[in-house]
Amino acid sequence: MPVGEFCNRIVVVTTPSTVVTEAAQLMRTHHVGDLVVVEEAEGKRVPVGIVTDRDIVVEVVAAGVNPEALKVGDIMGPGVATVRESEGLYEALRYMRDKGVRRMPVVDAAGALAGILTLDDVLELLAEELTELAKLVSHERQREARIRR
Image (cartoon, rainbow, N blue to C red; front, side):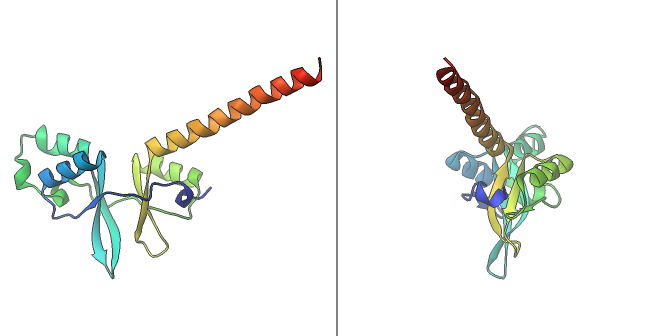
């Protein structure tokens, strides 16, 4: 199943020049724990990083740094791992594991931001799938019990 079929298409974005306090306010307003950092290139929003609530806590708050003095580009990690929307779920999960990330921007064939794949979303999808499998097993047992009375 391609990740483009179930990734979250609503992505809260920011730019590297956004002040850290503004980024934190965006997270609070939109009830998210991360922002995809983008730059405009040829009319497309291209992911260049991710900043998380953990980045703000570890790099700013715990370090005692004034959040007004830092920009998102100062605290986001170097580079960003992305996955194409046509990529399969298994391959995307393996790539996330290899990169050690819980969130990965999804891009289209041109490299423009198309969505985001998060571990939370995948766990929810898998839980739904396992629930359906459990219902199938239960239904099959009930059907067999009715037939073979």
